[in-house]
Length: 249
Image 1 (cartoon, rainbow, N blue to C red):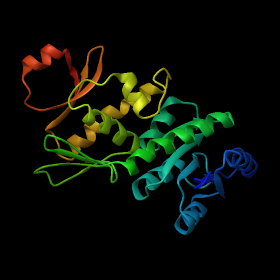
Image 2: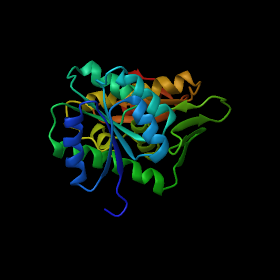
Image 3: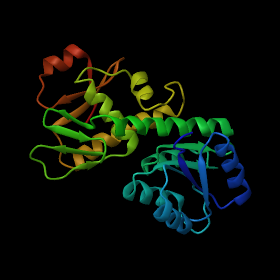
């Protein structure tokens, strides 16, 4: 590939890391191995990266804490590699801001496909006008911040949450089907883990509320999906569109 994506593999099992690297290099990626968080920081400072594959089971450092650090302080994409198959661990990884995860053992082809999906998801963010407005609320997809006229604080979103809110804003208040929303973030809507990703709707709601942006609501529309609305819309409109008042921010 002309501009090969650079991937840092953070894994202290060196034979395993090298095997993963070989599989990625066959797809044209440039790979660098980092057996520890300290080495990751050194490599990223000096070389940068487009994506980081992060093992949660690193010796001497909590992988979740490292994921949080990466997503809060860098723009790099993060895919978690984990041998932990419990749903709570996957949720913790996504809550930490990771773009995706793979559970060991995994097929190299699946990993490569997930990497392509994450990198694809980030490309349009750089290629289009990334500032959207919905009433007084503004989303900047580059900084992943949501601001509201008259409110000092901003809500900080993850990449996944930004993609979801972007799609809902572009719908202009019209309902977005659950499957369409998942396809927008390059996720198979039939996958059992899609429910984890739909949980990001609740995360967006909470972050907006914590920032004092209470003018914007995300409503569940029975049998249809989700839609944005501004607080103060009439109860008649809610009833007409079948909005689920028990599932809104």
